[in-house]
Amino acid sequence: MSMDIIIAGFGGQGILFAGKMIAYCGMLEEKYVSWLPSYGPEMRGGTASCSVCVDEKNPIGCPMVSEPKLLMAMNLPSFNKYINDVAADGYVVYDSALINAEVERKDLKVYAIPATNMAMENGLKGLANIILLGQAIKAAGFTTLDSMIDAITKSIPAKKAHLLEPNIKALKMGYEY
Image (tube, rainbow, N blue to C red; front, side):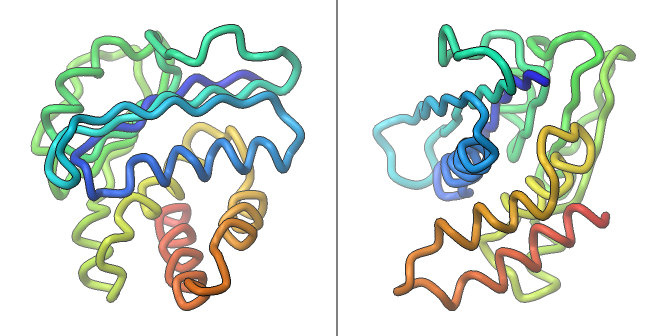
């Protein structure tokens, strides 16, 4: 299986972290991976995106994704920018709490999840990205929930160990939505 992914939103929403988790998970599964971040000079509030490529059999020739099989969008400008680039029969997973839009294309599998609201209502402020990631895993099937939990567990440093359980809870919430 090969999966080209674009994750996009505002800086500060955890866009790059979600992409790094997908890439790290792929590495743990001994797949070929690439992760290419893109962000403006602003630290928070500016645009942020990343391209992630995961392939079971073939090395990644180019880390840039122009026709994603999966789009994860966390704000309306990103949704509008990338929606027409998604490959036919691709997946779109977006935060419906922040994006009030309908996908007009009929050749996509669309998953709207109110990730930001879910995060706030469950004491998981700042983890809407991980909720969205859980839904993307279930929708597109590029990895398993257990593999992503393993990746998150191995990537959170000891000084931030208190963030492990909230991240796992958020991931499961998105997966089970």
